[in-house]
Length: 90
Image 1 (tube, rainbow, N blue to C red):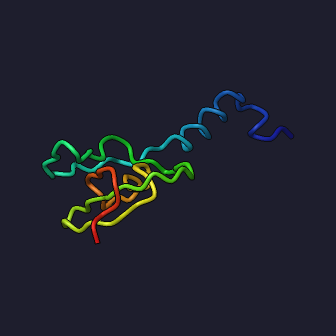
Image 2: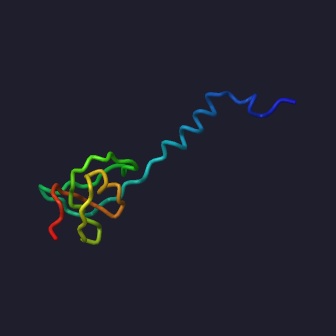
C-alpha cells in the first residue's frame, strides 16, 4: 500500500512549508506627524533584531516615550509609531 506522501511532489511540500515561514506582520499606519529627527516605523515590523546597542527613543501611539536598544527593537514593538536617535529624556 502506497502512502499519500509518496504521490505528492517534493516541490509542492516545500512550497507549502516555505509559504508558512514567510507570513508577514502587517504594518500599522502610525497616523503621527514625523518631524526631521523622528523616523516613522513603516513597512513590515521586524521579528528579529541584532544585539547591537544603539539606543533610540520610541514614541508609542498614545504619545508616551520609552528608550529602546536600537531602532529595530523600537519598531519591533507594535505600539511604537516612530523613533529618534538618542535616549528619551527622563
